[in-house]
Image (cartoon, rainbow, N blue to C red; front, side, top):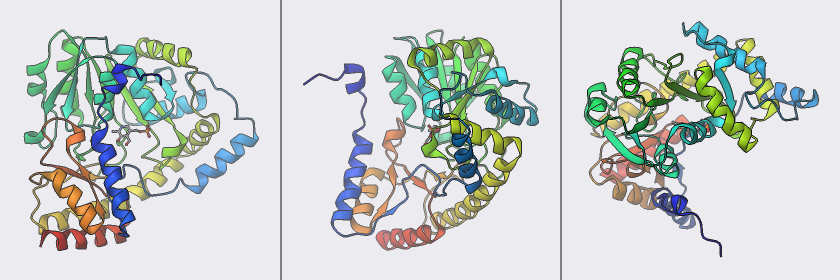
Length: 377
Ligand code: PLP
């Protein structure tokens, strides 16, 4: 039996695996499981995008594209940033196979083996795995006391010349916290002063409620990762992108060339078309309106039940506090059939937290909270 490489074997996925097992055990017991642990929109991809993708396939968009992606999509993406006042052009955009591929690419391109990588906690769990795959030393900065915002002074305390990269992710998974332009820029300046690259994962940037998320697009030492999985409910299409300086993109392009990577041609064409016509804004806007209703409902229920929780400003998650949350999550699914995600996989100091995803119907959310209330009483 071939042995898996140590750097992969050492990545701990047991927390997540255990949750899948518990959900399956509950289903086997005949419990109807309401799943509030899913990190993707519950909406199907809009018919307009599907229609255009089918047309694109008939029109020959079935081949490899440039490793940078098709120009039409790169231009449409750059146009959106220009609308926000960010000075970037199509040359600053590289299309990727989802945001995950962009994150892996950025990690391999810029994280030196043995260097330090700073990751705020809680954070999307993939950053920890990618940094480990690059054989880096992980440094976490807890954000719990700052409403899950990464404080620039706290970042400064852990920075030194050995740090090759700092991950930031706002709107944030798992907390829904948002950092505005000023806050994000302050963090960028600290990291950049030490020569580190800032990998800013902005995949939830169009899912926000009140506070407007900032962006590091256009900053010299920042790699902005984004995509359409969340904003256009296209998780299975695998379409993401990077916005960065031409110099940094050149380095990332090398990995696309080495690995023979380009995103699906028909998906690129379909999204380029809907973006050029502004249809994407309408699709996202309708989804966000629905997410807002759910967020307000979940927030009022959590408060009623006495949970300590920060009201999220973006994405579709809550990260409430609960003493010994892993046990709570396990018991809730096996006794009441409500699946949540324990906080521990999201980094250090999260054992007393859990994540709720409200990317599920209002009906499911109502039922789930009845069951949580029963459990607590
Ligand atoms: N980044 C964050 C913060 C996420 O939550 C996710 C998915 O859950 C991704 C990236 C992955 O996005 P994609 O489907 O575009 O690879």
